[in-house]
Image (tube, rainbow, N blue to C red; front, side, top):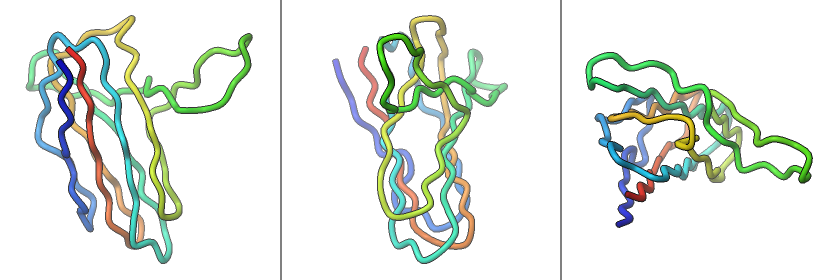
Length: 121
């Protein structure tokens, strides 16, 4: 089963989503979007929780980056967009399991910020 949730919908200030259940997920992917850019940037990050109470910065977002067969995937704590556009990211669920996540868009100057989460169970 696959579900897509819009967790941040064209927000115009630094905003954190409500908790999203990913319990039992096989894959979790993100689409981060910045629009209405004139200056500044939008930084998207994820926090994860095993109990729904304590959330910790998730530092292993897998970036949609080109690499060669001998390179490892690129893992980062956040994705910054400095112009209008979108970025795809995913979670490393081969090594980890979490019950909940939250997505934060941190605004610098202006723009609208959106985030969608695809969860495959």
